Length: 101
Image 1: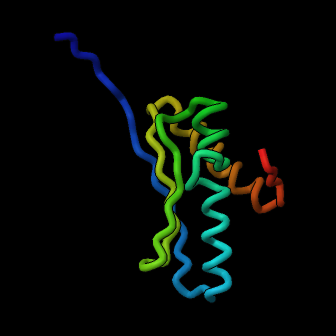
Image 2 (image 1 turned 30 degrees about the horizontal axis):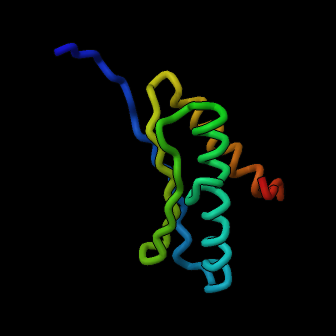
C-alpha cells in the first residue's frame, strides 16, 4: 500500500445576521443561492471549477443561528489564493456583477 502525505485544510468564514429583518433574511437566501449554495453559484463555478483552487467550495445559510458560512477544502498551498478569490466573489455580488451564466 502506497502512502503519501496530504496537506489540506478547510477554510470556514461566517457572518452573523441574527438581528436582520425578515425581508433581509429572504434576500440573504437569494444571495446564498447566487454566492455558493448551488452548482451554478459564483463559488462553485469560479473558485472550484474555473480556478481549481479547492475540492469543494460552498456557502450555507443557518437561519436558526443567524449565520452564513463559507466552507472550502483546499490544499495548503492554495489556501491564501482561495480565500482571496472567495472574498472577490463576494465583492462581485456587492457590485452587482451577477449574470445568468
